Length: 495
Image (cartoon, rainbow, N blue to C red; front, side, top):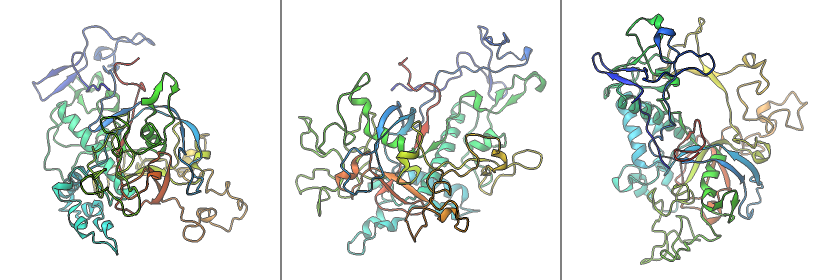
């Protein structure tokens, strides 16, 4: 895939006389095909039309070209859960981390949190710290991992574990802000600020709301003639400079990326059905150069974590480095084995039957910005972030696509979907999945995908599904980030 960074030249000129001012004047006139008005000209009102080629590929990401595939079971149903019934769906193109998030990447996050928040809010970094005690086993000596796995440089390129679903989401939000901050510094709009504090640190939402007053080097020229000559403004979403949010992938996205059908299709013909992220139905490499070597890091059988001394087939007793083994046809490493990975979805056994067949996902809770009585964005929280709240039913009364904020239980868990829908004495959150009494499923049960170093080969099938409470963590679940693709579903060099 060919990636292209966002550039202002040649249609934009840089003026260094007073900081950096970005000017949108073009040699050839850019005229609206709807009204005939000239764009980027303050003399006629300053209608804005920025030069744009395509989305910049964020650090660590790979473009996953979307399409249709059969989501669900590719292996025999040995657990008899019947929670991954095959269903044909379409996944839009998106970006995904080439590797799992490493201990080094996560320690960078912890270091930043301590540097910015430790003076006023030391509990912020503590809350984000992985639970290293997940390595303990009452009948095994795992204390060395408790003490060294997260911190020792020998494990810096190994996947971070002990991170729960909530911590993984917080990391994605932090990464969004750091990447967009670096982009604005690169484009000459912000200065490097190594002394950010709890109430003065770069946040993408705060910046787009016009409330960030950090170390500004130079803003973009404001073409609105009512603002006066020489007026400037902050970057807006319409400028196409800032990237969308880093986030966890949806279950459908993760499964689509893992199976990697782009590598074994001829036009619209899939040449070989896949059980794992590679061709064939075995877990060993069939290539003559590497014949017989394991394709992933998993548990081959009882008491066999890595093979025989002198021939450690998968060369890993616990996790392995995130770029070990062979990538799949999208260039993604360890989509089978090493660690299982968190995805966005709330778990329901019948999700494959319920979800929409385009961009399938369960877990929507719609939110909006908190505003004051005059409609202005309310004060930020103590960590310098914009406050959000759930949309109300009153705000959704005239909508046909949704009527309330929380849609996690829609068609599976709400009163309408229950045989006891007429019993008004039962609380809705208990009517179908009464956690701890009738079920281990509730609205905090999150899906995790893929096999790990502790799992048998069965779980390396991309269609396998398991779940865990979003507040819990283990020594075998990690994560990687994703990002929405805007515009064309294909990259540069394609139609």
